[in-house]
Length: 225
Image 1 (tube, rainbow, N blue to C red):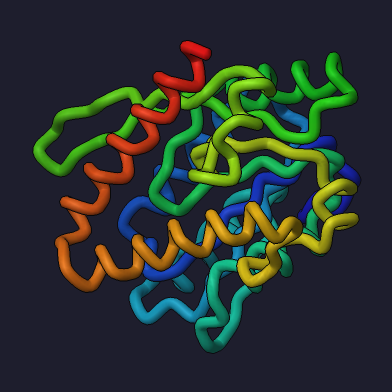
Image 2: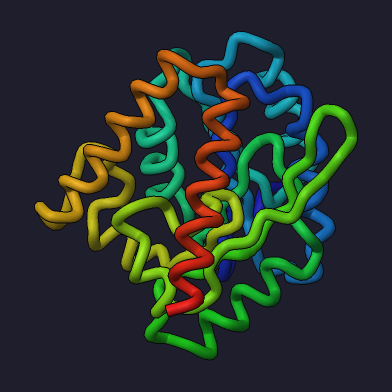
């Protein structure tokens, strides 16, 4: 029987053609040491067998709630839909091909409860390559460091983030076309235009390496100042 209580955390997982890793992702969440959570699983018009996998997981776990769109609507709309369905005080993000460490939610909830002035927290991530290698990608750790670079490049790895739902709803949720400050908007537009151009010229692997190099360089100079 489904649990429609009000958990402290809602784990939001958007799905699009993610059948290959979805079961592993969900099971990693279910193994968490923190137990007061629900999972919001939304299939965004997948064309593989993701819908069938989602249905199977929905039947298996009482704390998982599955929704689906017949046609692909895009990540922003899916996340806003899930945000409105979520019952938790905190939103925990994860993607269909990610794995969550067992203590992640416990640590992030504890930090947000201890620091009511903090809206969102993230973490470093371990990136796995197809050849079996893995690498820890480091992100900035303090509020002061993050504020120096957020308008240039994203300070968080999205699937590592936990944030306060009420604040997210107050600012209108996910809106990729909304720029809150004109100077910041200019920098962001320049960055994304360059990224679009790079996507037309170079391979995804080359762009990923360039993006990571940029983040590492910005992090290095931000930490050192």
